[in-house]
Length: 308
Image (cartoon, rainbow, N blue to C red; front, side, top):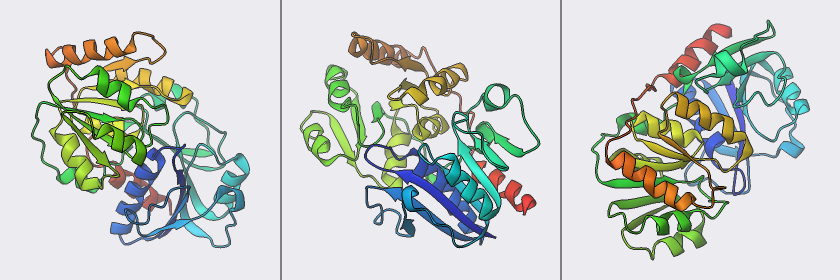
């Protein structure tokens, strides 16, 4: 099969679309598909992902046809989706919130309530891959041994557009547990490295990320792909909404115990709230039962193989 992936990432976009699309891409490549990965970004990811190809949504011109094209975007308009559909035997739309009325193809949505809420009314134009069974977990995460320590893992979307990292770590100063924070903004990383009992993961590779994540007993994260990976390691997570499109997802994650507690930064006392929530988790008042296995990419591949 010839398979192409089109997605976006960057300083103002986060890395979630890149991570989940590349995880699926890696599995299809492992299964001997001829794969190409296209990324629209203002960041050079060549060191971490040397086989990606740069492109721009604004100048997308599909001259080649593929058996399958995956598209994962919050920015591409319906005309781009129509181009994707016309250039493939089968198009797959990775979706979070039913953003568009997609052309004919397969809709892939990882939300635990996608089947009963977002896509309760299905149509004959689309095939549907919905729910936690299709969460793609990175290969290195599957190989990582879990050995819990007194460690708090903080991951706020890489670039930390809302400047929350410093405020969160300062609010946790009196909590003796080690804090590990993922950041991709060099200036913020330098500031955070000065804090006591804090380890900064600046542009971590997948192995560094999975090792530190698997050691952690509590996490603070935005509502993103990382939340599902934290759940895979059964880590109770305090989940923060930093974008409007994440609010519905947070409710679903709390309802299905993928995350432990929601946190609103619109509450003027949110720094006290976060400390209280951490104490509850430390007192064993909330546990996460892993509902995500490691077979999501395989299920996607098996389904698409039958479609072609």
